[in-house]
Image (cartoon, rainbow, N blue to C red; front, top):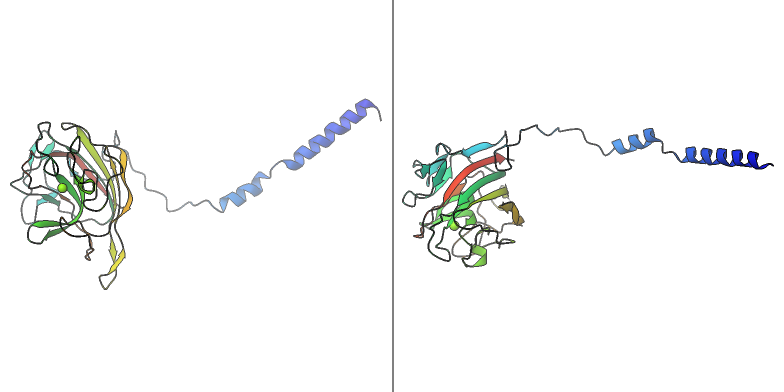
Length: 265
Ligand code: MG
């Protein structure tokens, strides 16, 4: 066997071996297709110009013009918070406001600002809050439901399960990312309402994920019941509920809100 013939033979054998190792794409594609899903197709929506802007399928709860989406505290009153320059400010004499529409599971965006001239300390400093499902007034005076706390905790100490970003009296926020008074802050909330059995017993608890100023502060937190100021959380059967923004009774200066939108899930 001369050298040239050997080289040709070796090259040919290598080429044949390489061809034998070529993947059969048609066969592989068929296997891969077994784990591809083509429906339901996610609805196409349009993003806002920034992540804070409502996407095209959101329900606008406050866009700066009016409080048409809101009732006063007990749903018999007109919402009477003050609107100035596309911003609404808590009116402590008027009480809290609740959404006219009721919700189960949702994604909620809102922005708030503690006034730059805020005074007070502990829980009496820019206290408001988002009642993720509002269940009315309990014990004559105190609200019932599930409260995501709003409070000025920029250099203001309080009990950690009652600071800004907490699920009040239930879940400490992962971090304190409070901005200074005078600066706008955001909450982006994913709320999964609790479900109940026909006998009113709890079927599945509520879950909440919260980003404050874009940072995770509640990570798929499981709730152990409604928030109470006094006593431990417990569940009471309910279905769709309004969302409430709190007017807290402390004497500190009222906070403001803007750009509130929701996407029922
Ligand atoms: Mg509060």
